[in-house]
Amino acid sequence: MRLGYACMNTELKTVFKTLRLATAEAEGMEKIKDLTLINMKTTLDIVQWNIENDILFYRASSSIVPLSTHPVNTWVWWEDPDFLLLANQIRSIVQANQMRVSVHPGQYTVLNAQKPEIVKKSIEDLEYHDKLIELLGGSDIILHTGGAYGDKEAAKARFAENYLKLSDSLKRKLRLENDDKTFTVRDVLDVSKLCGVPICFDIHHHNVNNDGQPVDFDEILATWKGFGTPKIHISTGKEGFTDLRHHDFVSEEDFNQLLLLLQGTDADIMFEAKLKEQAVLPFVRKLLNK
Image 1 (cartoon, rainbow, N blue to C red):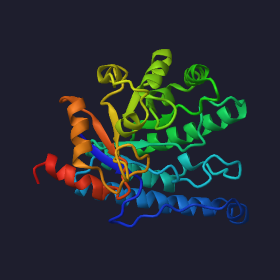
Image 2: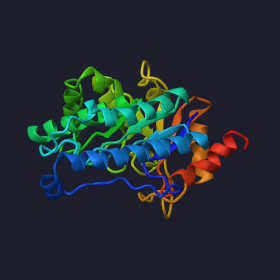
Image 3: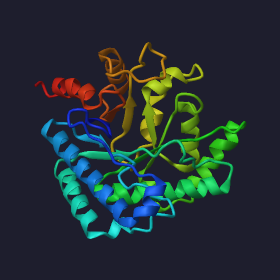
Image 4: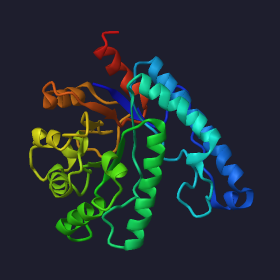
């Protein structure tokens, strides 16, 4: 079992550099490259810190390459020697320590959108994440189903249809997560039956959005056949069990509930907590008896 956190490290006080479009237009590709290399060095620092602290699961930032899919960015970053030098260092650490690395595209990457231009842009963003995660030695791209658009069944079918159009590389990495408002575990399992996408189970999302249906964990595990160790998300509500907002930490009660559900099944658990690595460390130390 590997435990991890997302993107920022509070101990290192990390910041990922972003870029305004006007600045990119004024200063050109060199500015994009400079900020990308800073972001890559930040990622390297985090990965090294994680290894030193026995954290073997990490979600890389989606913002490593500023304006990654915008037409203004004509830099072929995935072939740039300076970028690859840092990427190779990160990948070597990841592989040597069997660290799991994932990414999670944002809310505007909607594979089941009704408008073809949004689907096109979403696939472009997924392709960016695919290149990035491949070079970092990672394995997982996490995505939500998208919008219901007034017809949830049609929306599920549309996701599955568009998933089947993706490259083999993307299909090997993409995982579908149940969300906290629209698509329940049952819904994403329906999508998986249509296209074979593995399910990244979010236990807090299930607790607040389940249509009164219990989780069939064996059915979730079955979607991972051929895709490696299942990936799970956990968080604690900020002010209560069904609060959608994330707490600074994950409660021991919520973690134990997940362990009870797992019943000894190996899984990698992503902590979605405001205090990032600080939320993970107590559980890592307990597992390692430190």
